[in-house]
Image (tube, rainbow, N blue to C red; front, side, top):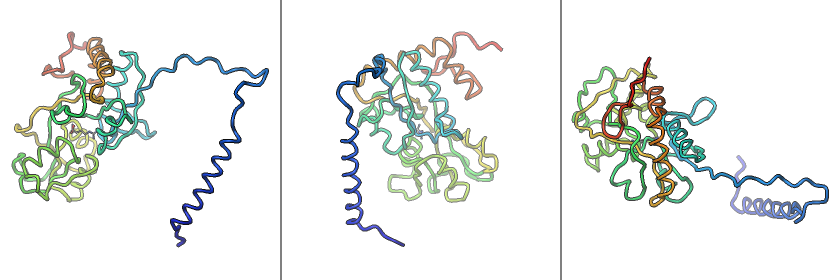
Length: 288
Ligand code: ARG
């Protein structure tokens, strides 16, 4: 096997670099267009496109379809809210690990990723008004004897690293527990349960239900537990970005008012949003 030594690599890359510099120089455009050349039409002040980071491994909230497009409930909500607010957005798949940093560093303007608003996260990010109510849910094998959250005290439990699911189980087992198995994504944790590597998975209800329903061969069942606190998802911006936050909040309010939110909700969850907390029931029930 030929190995590339660092020296060789450096040599090659400096040759490449020299070539690049040369070709860049050679391509320099004349300052004034040649006579007769049609000048490019004046571009209307390019609309700013806000970059939205999302960890697209969290169906039905965000995932990638066969074409590699990022789709899901969160995506439709942000697209509709952005349209209402008159702003342009584009979505970039962003690993959960580092997602909060990406907005702090300015690589992303917005984050939508089924992100639970927590006091800890509010120290470094600002959140929109909540757009979805959620709760943790346990997934276990259909034939499992596990009946409640407390039964997981000494068992191997899979979670997505750094999520609220991670938080609840870490609290139950203690932060030094070796039985909390942290994965890069929630589907990876669920796959691990299929092969028997973990006894249970704790994650957001919407995602667990979606997975269990769409993977009947995995033979999983879900367990709710009254000890789980209710959570709310928010769209995040860099701390202090009040201007963008206001736009997003206006957009969210707009799609709630005109029924778009309910339409999207029903499309993904088959029922109208519950009249709890900040997820108001629609003024008029959808007529069939
Ligand atoms: N709601 C949970 C949290 O905020 C999990 C979110 C994970 N989202 C994702 N797209 N992977 O911690």
